[in-house]
Every structure is written in C-alpha cells, then in structure tokens.
Image (cartoon, rainbow, N blue to C red):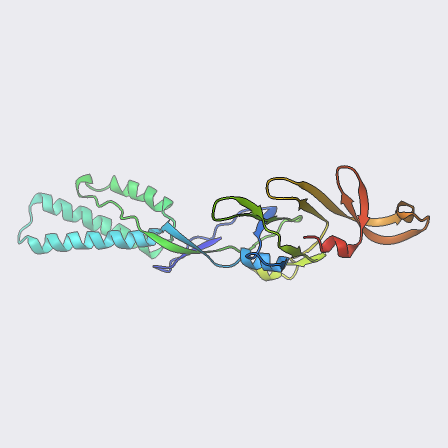
Length: 256
C-alpha cells in the first residue's frame, strides 16, 4: 500500500503486509459482475481526505520560522543576548527541518517523535511547534507476494441512507482458473489459482444459511448418482447441514 499527497506530491514508504485472505468489494450495484472487476476496484486509486502529511507540515512550519526570523532581523538594529539565543534556536530548527524535508514522506508518526527529540536540543522558549497540515491522499494497493492458498471474501453488506443494512444482490461470476498477474507489482505470469471451493450465503443481510461447494478430483462411483458405472471426472460437492450432493462445473462457477 502506498499513499501520495495531492498537495505536495510526496509519497509514503511502501507498506508491506502479509495476508492469506482478501476482502473484495463489488462494483456499485450491478446486475452481474466478474471477479476481475472486484480486483480492479481493489487496486484502483482511492481518495482519502483529512490525513496529516509530514512533508506539508514541515513546509508550513518552515514558513512560520522564516517569517519569525525575517521579523527579528529587520526589526532590530542591534541584538541582545536573548535575541541571539532566539535566532540560534530558530536557525538550528530551520536547518534540521530542511534536512528532514529532503527525505520526507507523508507519515507523521516518525516526524512527531523526532521533533520531540529536537525540541530538547534547543531553548524551549524559542521552539516553534510543528504546524500539522491535513491533506487529501491518494491510496493504492497492489499485490507483491502471494500466499500458496488464497481466500477471497466478497463483501455484499451495504447500508441505505437511513443506516439499514441490506445484501447486494449482484451475481458474481468467477473462473475455475484465476489469473491475477495484472494486479501484481512485478507482473508475475505465475499468479494463477485453481478454484478449490466456494461458500455461498443464502438469505438476507440479517441472517440466512451458508452452503459450501468443494472441488473433488478423483474417480467417483456413479452408483452415488444412481448407476453402477465408474467415470473419471471432477465433481463439486454441494454441502449443507443435512446432505451432500454433486454439482457440475458450470453450476459450481456460476453461483453468485
């Protein structure tokens, strides 16, 4: 995940987070959608408002210090000991902030801690507190390293204008072989997953029932289907609390 400030254009450090599952949002209330569209939305640019930016905060603090220095230097023809101390403290803080600005990111946590240490090195009486600036950020997420087994959660929970929850009825289509190399940071061509199971929720947002479908790769006796012949094939188990039945591949991948 990476953040970019729309005001100063400075980017954050890339943050890596290990995962085994991803929660995907559906496109806005469509009749039918595809899993690839969910990944496109997951990796698309997101706008976040009201986020403190360290780079913008440094620039604003430097503006205050520069203004104070200009006022002191042009207001006094001769400097007293206190003014010399004030100028020295302000210039040290100014130089420190300029060094920080060259390698600044948007994160404020590290800057706040370092500023606290800096304040101990100058006269507190002349210390200029950091001017915290909130900005609008662009956030983007990509996949860097994939787990061996990947679980995908499709978020269907929505809320209306009155705060009431409801279930998004969009029908989701997903393939038996999922290719997500286009959403990787390195464009890996080996980012493929074979579908092994799916869980479907039946019912409204406030309750319901879950049905699981699991892929079975084996020789299955057709006596389970009413014949005595054996056949090589792939079957998908339709699991519930009371029974196990078999579904074909098309029915398995076309479930919403």
